[in-house]
Length: 476
Image (cartoon, rainbow, N blue to C red; front, side, top):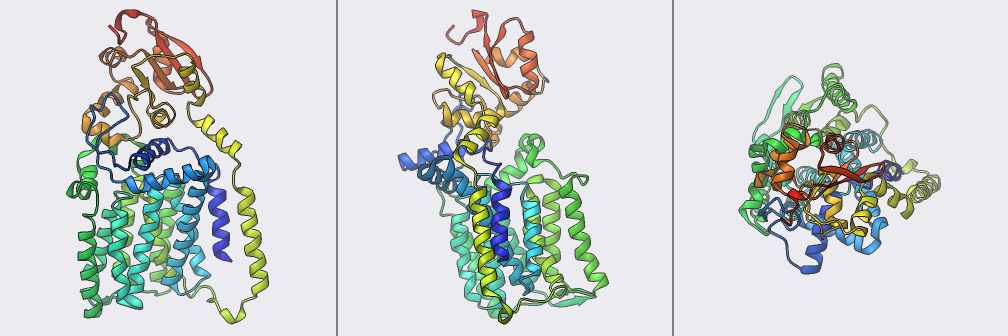
């Protein structure tokens, strides 16, 4: 019954989150793989990347996203998002129940996961990564407490994970934490470490060796395994300028929530004398560091912290007793929950309206109807939609910031977009003939002031400007 409540919550949370800017280039890549049966290893969409080599670290997730679109169009994509959001919350609830042994308290943990994971709910491969992270923690818990054979599902999990999202490296790091702490047995006040049974530890170590070997089951081998390290160590512009990679502000609601969860965990140790296991402390520290460094990692913090909090609260609420179940009231409530979820699912017209509100739908129609000729300069947030809706117009920029940082273009475009360079320099260098900009962008206000440019189209979210002077047109 509580799981059905989480499904309703999932639908209500994401029903208005359909149009993520990165959805569209994921969708286009998935279509290419689906139709050609080949994984692109170089950029096909931009004229500024010089066919930059790609690391296809999300190709399997992209195929899954396109499969949902091919099956059900926009509604199929929304169903994909609802299913993965619901699965994430229900799986998180199961994880917290497994840790705490209390199906009621576990609901509090599931709500904590929901609160922090709302930062990343979107039709993107990271949804699959969140689910795989929870699955890893479940398998490790089952292997420790029930049967070590559960560990041997981990290589399969990692073979899927590395082809869905670069966060597989976090899963390897978490396994390393568990393996490290399994070697020690001590008690320092309320901090406890329990050495694993040698047979259990040996089987876990073997499973992890196989998991590392499984990482090589990817299209480009070692390059795909090293991709996360390259992102963290070398992509300074990406990490420093993209909002989801920004540090957490403690004044933010989720920042306050993070402090509250940590405070609860440590107060329970002091006030109620609950134990805190060493592996839990290390996972809390890792999750806090990741979330404090990057907003998008708040979801990871929630997934790591919720089971710890649930276990510490396990005696605060009477446990579930199957013999006291009232089956028909529960069944009626589950049925009502499913009905609410069905009624809350957005219509196709609603989804189309969301796309039109966030993406340059009408502007693309204008470009095609008037046969505007490129090269085109487009707003960063519009690049993904253009890749999907107007593939005949190569984009200047889109959400694949790793591609543009590798090619050296990201910094150049960032300086132009933020008015930190001569506005004409980039336009002249690439012989831009028209620009498609977000209405609120700084350049949408600057370009009309330049004598060579005039507005030929505008709506609530986009502006098109064309060059009026023939001297710098692309065909010269």
